[in-house]
Image (cartoon, rainbow over all chains, first blue to last red; front, side):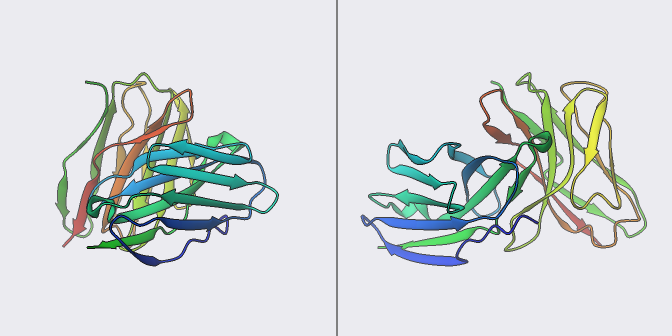
Length: 110
Length: 111
């Protein structure tokens, strides 16, 4: 493994903002990816960071600090449909292999 | 529409049988991947292929085999040597701009 850590589960309220953290330890880092996965379905791509800083895509933003081995996914104006698991994945230069964290299950309540 | 298809969606197998999971993509992607996901866990890499006629073992390749005879196709065979094959299997491909697309998955259950 590549020591990718995420909280197991989080709960937030509809309309609020939630931040899901991801820490990693790896050599040959070549990008950090966030995916959303609803129960029983395949993951869908949300965002990608290869350089330090914030990437914004509508209600979703992702931040990366390579020196700290740290990323977060920020979800704004939470909706009930955002209830899902969020997977953090690190890509390595070596054959572009992806390594996934165990995922954070987000529960959005009314 | 472009995308990745996997079949079947649900598969049941008796112990001791080999079974092949299909993965086809019409996205013209060179790189393709097979992952396994167990309940409450992330994805673990079984095999990957960067180009036709070439593939590499991932972290949990034992008991599995693949082929990549065509760019569009990357089938995975789960052999009887795989001791705990019941899982959700996901096929993926990666575009030139680094986005990884997943198929809908095949849920394999060994009876």
